[in-house]
Amino acid sequence: MRKLIVQEMVSIDGFFSGRDGDISWHRADDEYEAYAIAFLRSVDCLLFGKTTYQLMASYWPTADGEVAGMMNAIPKIVVSTTLDKAEWHNSRLMNSSIVESIAQLKRLPGNNMAILGSAALASSLLHAGLIDEYQLTVVPVVLGEGSPLFRNVPCPINLKLVKSTLLKSGCIQLHYQPEETNDKAGGN
Image (cartoon, rainbow, N blue to C red; front, top):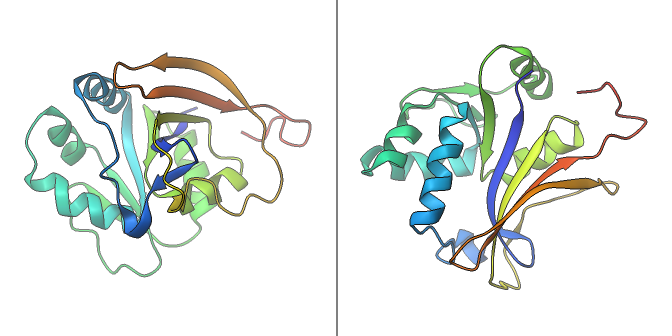
């Protein structure tokens, strides 16, 4: 079965974007770019919520480089009940039966799928037990406010650390997987 991986840069205090969506504090140096390229090679589907999709679609089609080529080529699913169309290359809308549709996609053959940005989507799929891994790059900055990565979590969700890497930039990459619990055993 394919994995659904959430890949994010986050501040030490847990925000994936600052006030008014600011991401100028992200640190994407050559070392991070090498990680991003390897990560994108491991997926064959990107999932976005409306806001992140619109930001990505306004940037990547005119960007240069290997990451841009991969971002434009990988098929994308936009989860939105308010968008009428998704025009970025290889994009399609998903606007109903979201949890069931994504669970079905996970059962199909292929490489892993990833959510980039889109914290509300990631949180809803976390609640549904569909997230298999979090790959978080923690940037050594405290924002104090912004958009939190985890929203409306109804109960604690235990994660286990499966990998960590210290980058030269001072960022730390942490890879977590949900711990199996008695009520979720066999659910994924």
